[in-house]
Length: 292
Image 1 (spheres, rainbow, N blue to C red):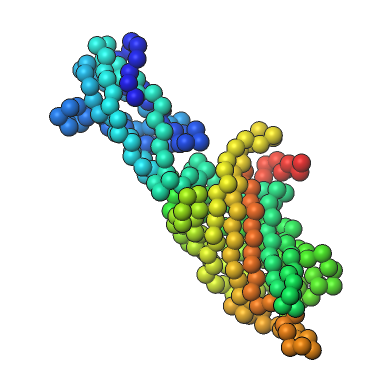
Image 2 (cartoon, rainbow, N blue to C red; image 1 turned 90 degrees about the vertical axis):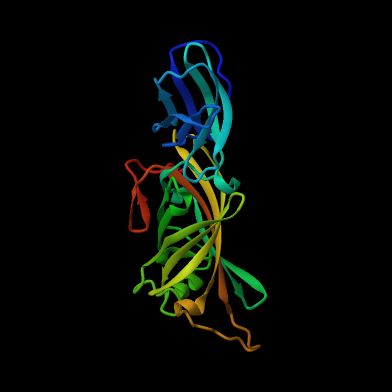
C-alpha cells in the first residue's frame, strides 16, 4: 500500500472482505517510525475511511483492525502534499472462514430444501421433506454472535407415499394436530474449519425442546437474476426419535424395526439479503418470492 500521485491532504482507504463486501466500522491506525500513533479513523457503512488531517511527509505504518477479522499491517508513504492514499485493504475472517456480510438474511423456501432420511426395515432408506418453512439469519459483525431461527409446518411432511405421510402426521410420530410447528433457534456459533461452522441451538419438536447442533458449510454469496443478493448454506444434524418422545416402533416378523430410531436431517438453504418476518412457517416479504 504505497501512495501515488498528488491531491488534497489527508488519508483515503477502502476496507473490504475477500468477496468485495464493505467492512463496516473497521479501524485504521497510522503510526510513525517511532511507533507513535498519529492518526486513528473508523470506516463508514460503505467501508470507506476518509480523514482530512494532514500528515508530515515520510514513511508510516498502517494497521487495519475489525472485530472478527485478522488485522492487516503495512507501510505507506505520505507525499509532500500531505496526502496518504492507502487504497483498498482486504481483511480475512479470523480462522480463514468467510460468511456473508453482516445483516439480516431471509431463507427462501422456494429454493431451499428441508429433508430427513431414516432407515426402513434396516435395509433401505426413507427420504422425506417438509414443503412449507421459513427462517431468518442474522449475521453479526462478531460472527460468533450470529443467530438463526426457523419455523417448519409439520403437516407438510412428504415422503412420496400418502399412507405413510398420514401415519407420520399421526400421534405415533409428529402429532401435527397437537404440535403444528417445528422450530429451531440458535444459541451459539463456533468455527469448525475453513468455511465450516457448528451451530448450537434448540429444536422444538413433538412438544419437546432439545439441544441440537448443526454442522454448517457456507457455499458462497452472489447476485441473483431478480436483483437481490443470495447466500447458500448446507447443514446436517442427527436426531434420535426417542429424544423427542416419538417411541412408536412397528416390528415385523423378523424382529426388525420398520422405521429406524435415528434421523439424518439435511438442509440446503438459500437466503436472501434483507429482513422479513416469519409467520405460519413461511417468510413474509414485501414482494412475493421468485419461483423460477
